[in-house]
Every structure is written in structure tokens, then in C-alpha cells.
Amino acid sequence: MITSANLSTAHPLPAGEFSTWLNAMRRALAGGPGMDVACGSCVGCCTSSYFIKVRPHETETLKHIAPGSRSVAVGEPQGTWVMGYDAQGHCPMFAGGGCSIYPHRPDTCRIYDCRIFTAAGMNAGAGRSTINERIAHWRFEYASDDARREHRAVTAAASFLRQHPVRFPGGHIPSRPADIAVLAVKAYTVFMNPPASDADTAAGIVAACRVFDQSGAA
Image 1 (cartoon, rainbow, N blue to C red):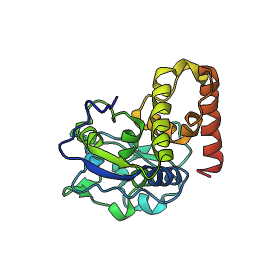
Image 2 (image 1 turned 30 degrees about the vertical axis):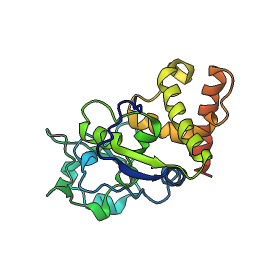
Image 3 (image 1 turned 135 degrees about the vertical axis):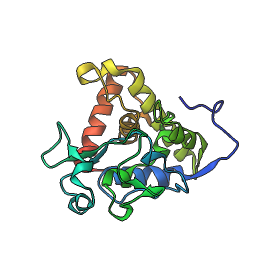
Image 4 (image 1 turned 60 degrees about the vertical axis):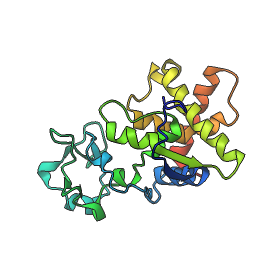
């Protein structure tokens, strides 16, 4: 977990105002515009062994991905594809130091924002040192005390999800750090006024995520 003791202070990166970022992230997860991330020269998300999902409606994107660079996504809706990575962990669309299809990149890439890990107080997982270094350097600003409470709520949601998997249906939660961070952003409101019991908290998270997925960030 990221703490004030292990965050690097050598080269802080401005992450923006937290509430503004949080609202934009929730809109993006609900199908709105992608995230505007100050990546600079960082290409960590392109070179860190990520599987990239391409959904059926992304027909323009699929035109720019050779059939040999994608495979059918198992367990997903018909017409969904996934791109893997090479022996170096690079996306097949990574070339010349960047994304070779950037204007036509998948929605997965447009939504990806490593600040979500900083918000959730966690890193991107083992083997993703480039991204984790970036995560440790982001610094949010806060326009109000409510913004600080929102950040604490997102971090608390991610912590609860990792610490209490047996409280959830099937006795588990998604194992990927990115999925946990996304759930925390979707359900952070539960921790603005947390329930008294762990069981009620888990039920609140499930309900909040269901409502979000059905109606978006509204």
C-alpha cells in the first residue's frame, strides 16, 4: 500500500484537483470521454504486459489492428477481442517509442489512468515498475475538505475490498489491482458515511457498483 512514508518526494507530479479528477474518472468508466493524462514520455501502460480488450462496437479500432495481433476474448460478449503482449511485455501496437494507432486506440487505453492507483492507495502490481514509479510520484490537490474526504473514501474502499473478499458473493473479488481500483472509484460513496458492520459495507459496495453500472456516474 502507498503511504506517506514510502511515497517518493524527489519529483512530484501534479495529478490535478481530486474531485475534478474523480468526477472525470467516473464519467469515463460510465462510457463518457477518455481521460486526459499528463503522460509525458511515460509509456508504462504500453510496455507492462497488459491485455487490452477491444469491444464489438470499436469497429474503427479493429480496422487498425491486424488479425494476427488479436484473439477472441474468452467469456466476453461475442465480437470482443483482446490484444496480448510480446516477450518484453509490449503491446503489439507499440512501435517507435509510442502507440502506432494512437488516434484509433481502444477505449480500454483511452480510459486507463494510472492516477487511479494513487487515488486507491495501491500500486499496479508486481512486474509493473515503470507504472508503479509513476503512481508514487502523483500528487493530488484538494479544493475543499470534501475533496480530501472523497480521496480517503476511495482509499478506504480499495482497502476494504482487498481485506474482506469473503464478504462478497462467491467469496472473492477481482484479483487484478486495476479492477480493484475501478471498483473503489465506483463505490467510494459507501465510505463517505460507512455502515457499522462489514457485512453492510460489503452489501453497500455491491449495490453501489450495480447502480453505477446500470446508470453510470450520475
